[in-house]
Length: 111
Image 1 (spheres, rainbow, N blue to C red):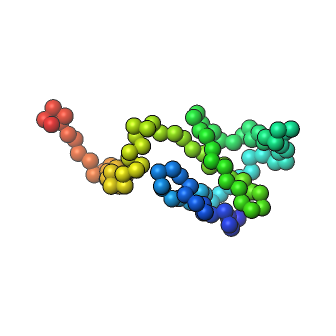
Image 2 (image 1 turned 90 degrees about the horizontal axis):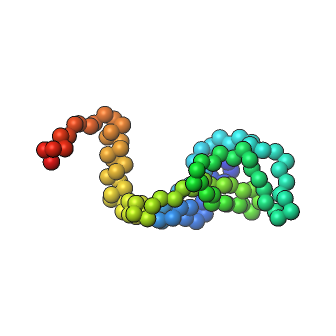
Image 3 (image 1 turned 30 degrees about the vertical axis):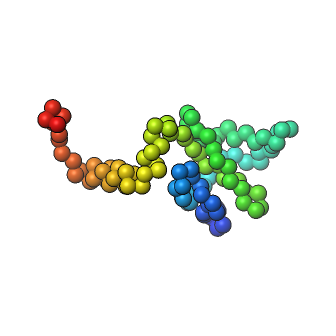
């Protein structure tokens, strides 16, 4: 299954002004076939992967193909990190350093 015209979001895809591509992976698999809408035009996708607290942004293209982009909420008290690019970059750098093993022990009593 090709990606063709479904590779980017034409507008801002995420809140907080973070632009991103909708599609994060290039491999799609069929999880249901010949699913028909019910009388209220709802489609039930019983095998769709969803965790607790997941909601979806729904995107459609001009020929009716639909993408469900899973979302999770963050507490308002943590939203500042997504709004402050400098702080976000510092957290990302720290995580990269931790993955690379560039950590050291700190005696909390000495602080």
